[in-house]
Length: 79
Image 1 (tube, helix red, strand yellow):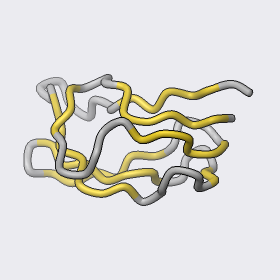
Image 2 (cartoon, helix red, strand yellow; image 1 turned 60 degrees about the vertical axis):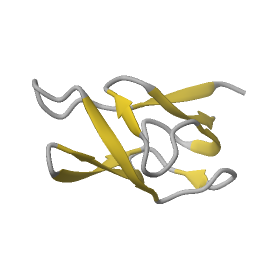
Image 3 (tube, one colour; image 1 turned 180 degrees about the horizontal axis):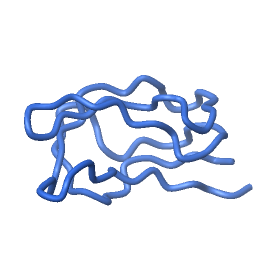
Image 4 (cartoon, one colour; image 1 turned 90 degrees about the vertical axis):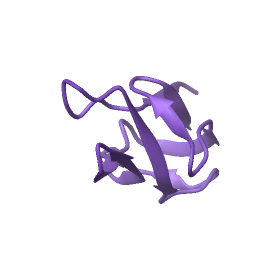
């Protein structure tokens, strides 16, 4: 079974990090590619982040309220 890394995307040139506001899925939930996984806040803007692939959300590495850098590995999906 292949794993898909969920990385914090960069939504603007000046964006260096973002705060995890809420996870819309929990570990063990099935997700479809493009389905929203979490909500982040960067530069006072809230953005929903879609899943990069389909499978089961197998781990969450960044908790709600945590600030993480762009391109950080924040979760894993088992495809």
